[in-house]
Amino acid sequence: MNQEYSTKWWAAFSCIAFIEAVLLILLVSGQTSELIIVAIIAIACLLFLIPRLDDVISLTLERGKLESKIGAISKKVATNKSKIDKLDKMFLLSMSDAMYKNLKKLNSGNFGAYEMRDGLERELYHLRDTGYIEVERIRDIPFQGNNLCEHVKVSKFGKQYLEMRESVEKEASN
Image 1 (cartoon, rainbow, N blue to C red):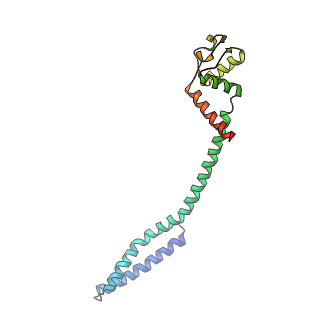
Image 2: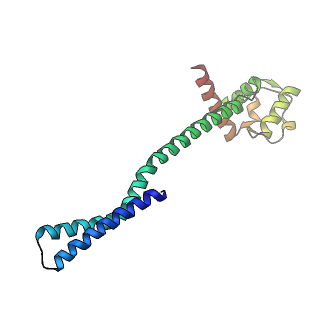
């Protein structure tokens, strides 16, 4: 609060205190009436409330500032949420389509016939190293088989990844 504003309030407080003193003198001097008693009580209340009035006025004035700050913060939160959503999409879509399809087939429980060529082996190492699949030893998987799911299991994290990616793809198609 600036100095000029505070000085005005103290001047008003002093005037009201002076009027209160005059009314009290009238009361003590024997010139009592109901009106003087009511005026004394009213002015006493004003004397009590005037210092609090500064707080109420400053709170009212700061309310606009608070609303402005809340609006600015809400805008930043929305901007950050948008950036996070973009990063989520970028992360979820960073896996190649071929690897994603293989992870989906592993999750289905029916991968089908396979041959452990370099590309598939590399994908399995990557999926294992990133935590999407669980496998004892990739080198122990037979070179050929009827169902790769007999040797590899999709992890909880891998299942979460699949769910999130499917939801992002659904959003993109709508």
